[in-house]
Image 1 (cartoon, rainbow, N blue to C red):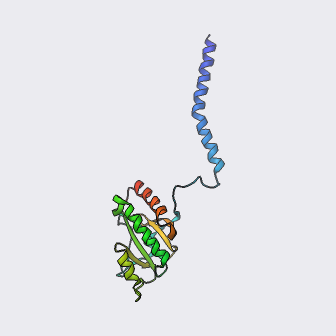
Image 2 (tube, helix red, strand yellow; image 1 turned 180 degrees about the horizontal axis):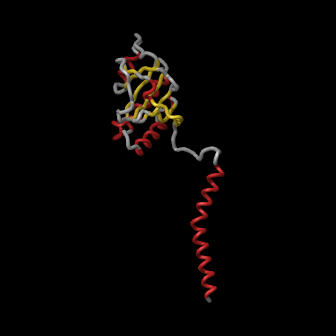
Length: 189
């Protein structure tokens, strides 16, 4: 009788150990099966900047010619980078960003928008600078060098790190979805 109960006890102990160890073993095998292969997927739409680039290293200047630093402002930035004049694709991106900024609702004060023109900010007689300033009065304007950036839209965090890159055409809903996620989980800015 006693050997029968000890056999049942051992069987229950083995079952209990299996319940704990089988999921761990399955996870271990699954992890090493996909190691080195394509990532499982991402919920972000933009291109994650790796390695991290600091926006403060770009040497940006505002319209008055003063140096601009993103760090310490405690806001997120949507930075549109344009080569010289803001062409049609750039202007469409500015329009999409204004709409995305409005759709942030209560988080609007946590985000600012800026246009980075490479070289000097255009002051030609065609009124390019004036037209952009009239259409987008809340838009900050900077000039600087391209450095490692290419034309497109960037999300810059409150610590001045460039987080995501988007092409001009992705400046609407894809960017808004990522920005909402960032603002939801962020304790800064």
